[in-house]
Length: 146
Ligand code: FES
Image (cartoon, rainbow, N blue to C red; front, side, top):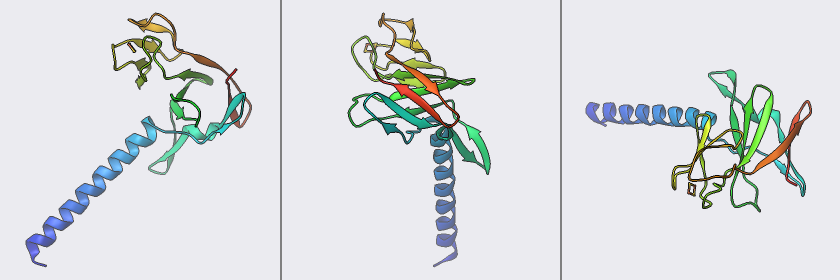
């Protein structure tokens, strides 16, 4: 291998490593589908699912996503202080999947916006997102489906 090829190869490998690291870090803190146990009436999620490692430091996510085999839309479990809010990510206007952008859900179809409790901030949707009661113990958060 000639010197110029060696330098090109090293630069490409370094760039690839940087991109992988950046994407990995942003994914670990923004879109994370948690491991969960789904039963008929509830979903159990370990509180530790909100934690991730960044530069050997334990960090906390503000939210995690849960996808079940039977549901068409994911549930977003949002943490604020020690309170958890669970919202089905289905827009109440015409059923598109909403996206979490910062501390609000935004519908990409017609622009409705909801706060993290599911309340409508901007239409055309006029009904809140479907929410689920949550409870917790020392280890788990429970999302009650009924
Ligand atoms: S489907 Fe969400 S705003 Fe229309």
